[in-house]
Image (cartoon, rainbow, N blue to C red; front, side):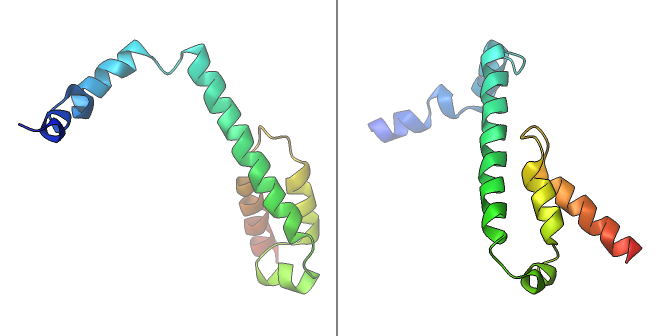
Length: 99
């Protein structure tokens, strides 16, 4: 049996082993929550940076992609704890309904 075969048959590839690790490191662990919170804020920050680059486009181009300049500015100014993508989707849907 090769080393490769031994690695394939190791416990680390066994889903039951992963369940055991979840019990060992529960999701309510402070470090896990802090990491997830930081990762979420970093993702939001990157998304906001992409939104800022959209402000360089003309209003007609923004309208073609379904956004307005005011909505972009409001989404950029939201706290990082709020999902800007969801907010833009809600605003777009409201604009579609109201005309």
